[in-house]
Length: 315
Ligand SMILES: Cc1cc2nc3c(=O)[nH]c(=O)nc-3n(C[C@H](O)[C@H](O)[C@H](O)COP(=O)(O)OP(=O)(O)OC[C@H]3O[C@@H](n4cnc5c(N)ncnc54)[C@H](O)[C@@H]3O)c2cc1C
Image (cartoon, rainbow, N blue to C red; front, top):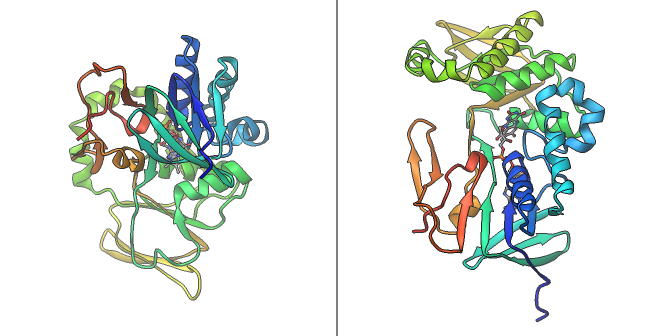
């Protein structure tokens, strides 16, 4: 068997989203030889997806937050980070030996230090009718918009959380305001959230951004239904309508697309494959890698970004 082509560096970073780009460029600026691996064809991760190509085309529509990613992507080149595009990592062995596929071949990378920056995935939200063509996640609609300029038409958005409102506001800016927002948060949820008001006020910039999104929805005349229940999608061969109950009244909205989002959860596939201990995070209703003590050995795995945790504890 031919041995795999092997790259040896000081640090391997898996994931070229904001966390991985920042970690890779910072380490390189301090003199480390850094290899950055990401299965996507371009750097950017979820928020800054394909930013260097897309910002000049659709930057105005996607907003200043999106264009902020240009600096991070440029930092990779400026600091001499070796970025392998389209590299899907599928095995990490102690040492570290990282095996990945790139196009038609596999390759190996070795380094004493490893950072996992594999980000987040949308939380699956199975509802009756969710497998009908035309039903997808809000993030999927955003990927179509960011990467290909495809604007979802006549959409109903269902769920709760910031990504839902961001995608709705982006659709309004693209001239395809959603037909309705069906929000699943209830008055008791709202009262429970008030316990965190202090923290929310400390993050006042996010509150201002959220208020701006709600204003954009109001200006575009998007109806919002809260505390919705009994949601199901219906249609012959593709989604044609959503039925639900709000404030005790049964409703039906005809539509062409349904976008679901109930927040994001950490993308833990690689951490789990490495047998890193995970804990259940009650507030996020998701499993996360456990934080360990500061690493004493030279060989340390760390994580950054949505995957959270600093030093990772092996089981
Ligand atoms: C679909 C979606 C859209 C989002 N859009 C926004 C938005 O517009 N604005 C916002 O503020 N937040 C958005 N978020 C939230 C987002 O998670 C964070 O804002 C931010 O992108 C997280 O940065 P990160 O660097 O931790 O991870 P990410 O940006 O998620 O980057 C992780 C990277 O790891 C790579 N990766 C994962 N596993 C592997 C593997 N095995 N091999 C190789 N590469 C791998 C992925 O390809 C990805 O590029 C979105 C989340 C999702 C799921």
